[in-house]
Length: 371
Image 1 (cartoon, helix red, strand yellow):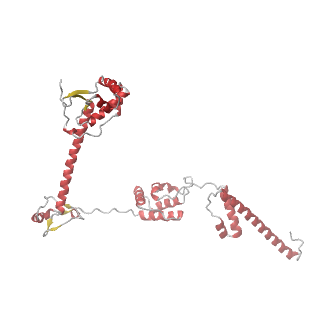
Image 2 (image 1 turned 30 degrees about the vertical axis):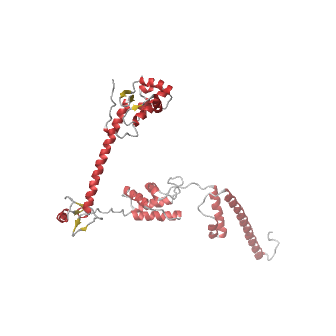
Image 3 (image 1 turned 180 degrees about the vertical axis):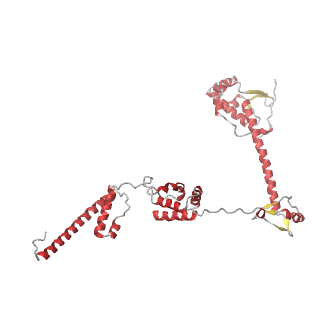
């Protein structure tokens, strides 16, 4: 019995470049799982050929053309085709025009119809939306260029115009309908400006000053830091300027901070309400003095006692920093030299005192002066 090639719906006039492929449906389908790997590959290639077809059917004039579609040898195609035909995955019909048998996968044909109809509905909705936007833009253009007052063109660039009448088409219509226009700036009062927090400026100045005193550079500050400060003040409305200033001072006197910009740590500023933090991020005394710190402190004290505070300030700093190995060796050498100088000076001072005592008691006798 001859069968006529079926016609496809109007929604499939333009074939889609893709279809919905669910891996679980493919791997868990009991019919697909019974096929050999070669058969599954041929099925996929023929499904692609059906999807690209404008009629929704796969038509091959001879066996050679079908092997090109399936991309396999003739012997493999004959063996695989019997395997596919036994699963009833394909639907065959005879085409009178081509004088050959055409086939398709019914489940793929249903997916094609559903996807094409959905895409066509989206295209129709897009055309309707585009036409509405075009009409709206045309109406606004007519309102903005409506002639009035002796043929002059009025353009509204700073304010928006509200109207309840139809667009004017002539000079008389514009004059008659001029009363129906109302400036939005006159109809709606301007919104009041946001009242700034009075604590913002003093807290910002305190942060900038303490930052510069601690790190000797200007504090980085921009809009993001200002917004972070506003959010911090909004979340703590009952904190006074003095309390927040004490937290800022405690932070910059702590040992667990770096030179990060304020927006990165403003949300954690309340952690310093209890006092200054040590190097471990806790409120309490600092760590005990290390051997290196004690050595530097003793050296500075000896220099200050012998040569004065000015020389001690030039030789060392009260804020100890861990030196390198070479610097430590140099420091130890300097300490030995300084210790020998101090001992030599002390011997000289003790010898001068003994000489004065001998001169006062026994006269200029050099025998009692220690050598």
